[in-house]
Amino acid sequence: MVPRSARRNAGIKRGVTVMAQAQATLSIDLGGTKMLAALVRDRTVLDTHKMATPRGGNPAEWLQALFDTIAPWKGRYDKVGAAVTGIVDDGHWSALNRNTLDVPERFPLTDTIARLSGSPAFAANDAQAAAWGEFSFGAGRREDMVFLTVSTGIGGGIVVGGRLLGGLAGHFGQFRLDEASRHMLEDQVSGHWIASEASPHQEGATAREVFAAANAGQDWARRIVETSARRTALLCRNVQLALDPKRIVIGGSIGLAPGYLTSIERALSDLPPRLKPSIHAAELGENAGVVGIADLAERQQQL
Ligand code: BMX
View 1 (cartoon, rainbow, N blue to C red):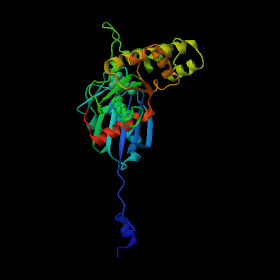
View 2: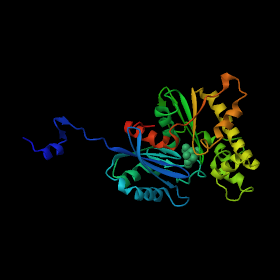
View 3: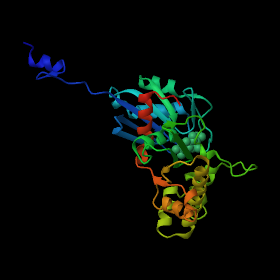
View 4: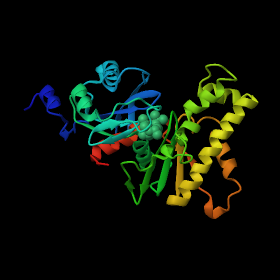
């Protein structure tokens, strides 16, 4: 007869074999403003840790700081997925817009994370990962969809026929407003722009404070928020013409700020039904990226 303690150690309990629970995935969402780390298992977020993305330094230092704070999670995950602002090719990370985050050309992202974590690492663009999260488990409803995150920059992801497009696909924030302009669309719409437009009215105001002022009825703040939302609405309209998705899902700290989606809807209200995008708020909120990258890492889906 096997002693009870030995049976427990062998994972056998009253004749039933108890399966060892699968390890979680460590997911990292590294954006222009915040870094979010999460332990994710079967799309459930078990634990999170959030910190500001440092404005100076380099990616190796940012990642080291993040891994130092989540050191107690060691042993709870067996792989890492990283969703980062910028473009990832062949495990290397670069910025397209260094105003959003000053990432040097071809930083060795997956190698650095694999070294810091001791686990295999997988990486993709943050908005593409979030698009996959919303498509699979959120407001995308597994239909052809475009995801837009209006945040520090404007990111995007496209899922057609159940496939997430990689590479440059979805980088709508990089659209130029005209051929002579040095400005990208995101530099005229997103968090940095909102804060800079606010400075003559309220020195040092953050985008969040501009929204608070707009909702408190301040005209200057309303004008800034409305201008940003109208430009995002125009982008949605053009996206609809280019890709005709069933849904456009909007996320990001600006996209989900109170009143922003309503302003987009208002700007689109006069369009004939055939041209009108179907706009939805992201359902996974700020977890879209970490949930999406965990699923991609499990599938090892190369983008
Ligand atoms: C920029 C670009 C995208 C990113 C998007 C949203 C960089 C560094 N980033 O368009 O890759 O998806 O911003 O980024 O070039 P976030 O930081 O606002 O989430």
